[in-house]
Image (tube, rainbow, N blue to C red; front, side):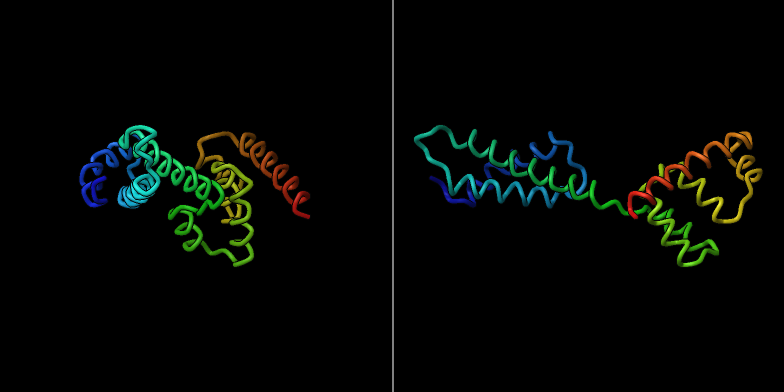
Length: 160
């Protein structure tokens, strides 16, 4: 069999094609390296009596990249970090540290719209002001606040 360097030159376009077919647009270099590792493992484990190297290498590289995508997705799902706007919003407001910690924990429980509503109340806005800002009636804001309070009460019971 050829040297690994020759195999890399020959199969580099295949790795790029796999990355493209999986619609990977972030961290392409990292996934390319994972593809190269998969190619190396295929190169080391290949048994010529069982078929063609191209098919074996393709499925091996595809599998390694897909495995890493799944691992990355699992990590992202489990470790949600607030976006930049959230941190700017918290830093700009005159809110105590305890309220900031409470808001961070609430971010896990509430939807984005509910969180924004809670934030407005923490900042001292009245129901009327929030309703005007959102462009809805005061009763709609009161209903949303009641639903949010119920969710938070259930969450508080669960963690207690």
